[in-house]
Amino acid sequence: MRLPRRTEGGRHRRPVPASLPQSAPALVLAVPGRDTDLSVGPAAELAAVLRVDNPAVDVRAARIDGGGLDDPSDLRAVLADATARRPDGSPCAIVIPLIATVNPPVVHRLRERTGQERKTVEVTAGAAAGGLVFMLAGGLLSGLWFRRIP
Image (cartoon, rainbow, N blue to C red; front, side, top):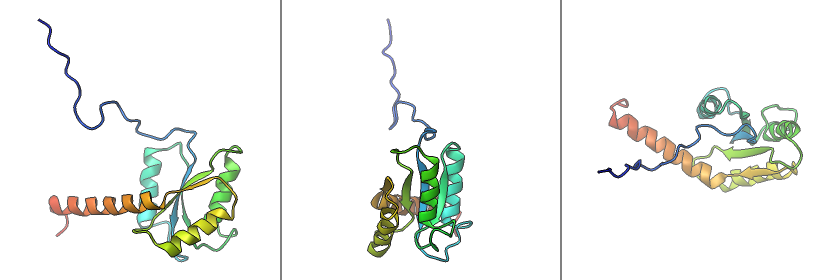
């Protein structure tokens, strides 16, 4: 007698790729504020994690309110550099704003900065804000659950 084959349970039944393809556009983490230090804090940590998980993808952090094209950390300068590295017609970058909630003035400035460049850019404001909120809430609940936060 032959037993029925057991199917894998769980949410993902097929293997999910662990990293993005090499042809993926650059990931730009857009941070509001002129004086934000991009070398420390959430933007730097998130960029480091993305670089480890996706070594073939260009991951950068940029300031939405930077000092213009002369400032290498300004969003416009980062997008100009990303465009120079990509073939014509393909998206140069995916811009992910690191904001905790939908902030209309910041989103408006972000649209101005990406729209002035006349480049193919994808803005994911709602998804990034929701994902960031859930990620922070999950980290807090995990810390409380495992008693790592007093």
